[in-house]
Length: 265
Image (cartoon, rainbow, N blue to C red; front, top):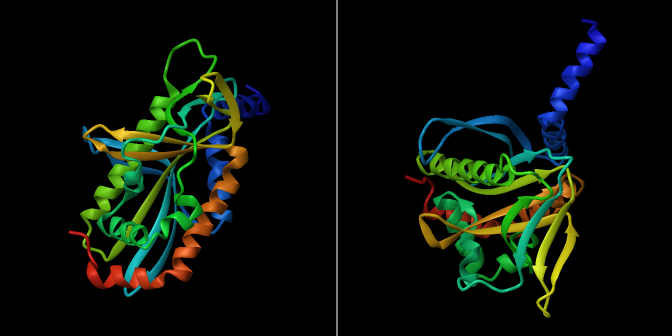
């Protein structure tokens, strides 16, 4: 076989399996000041055995000998033939006041989130705000059945986040970690919802939030960001703004956490 033809076949195969998207997203994360780990293996917290998440991007700061780390847990889904739809609602949830607990965090990470919430600081951080439209189901549109890529992506990113939280909580290192699960897609994203007249509406967006109750505890939430590749740089910029706000303007809270509970177990 001619080498050029083989190159073309390999490239086409890589495109079909979404590898170029993963490489592009990892590059964007690095360019925005994050350390990156790709194809990270983790133990499935439900059934055991090893699984793999596409990308972990993380940024950290040491305060009082405790490492405060913010990490994005990224699952990339290439689906150039099919747009994605987030079914959403403007209705506030019964447990709306507790949605801030839906962030994946180590014990010390949750301690920091609680301190930010107690001082009404979470509302000032753009990245911790909850969208007006709250997603409750994500699908690929115009498909003919087959593998549910949306469900697979959701399970992958939530299981990886849960596993990383467990790993952090079982560590004797002085760490405080908060994780942000995100699904990145390379096609258009629409939110589907009912307006005030109960008419179905479709709105194109670059970013939507999927908010699910946890299977083991219906009063706890999972917050998953769904972002198009075109919007991903903006998404990281919003995350950076919130992280830098915490690092630079709320170091007193970081010091409180480091003094109260330097290790997790």
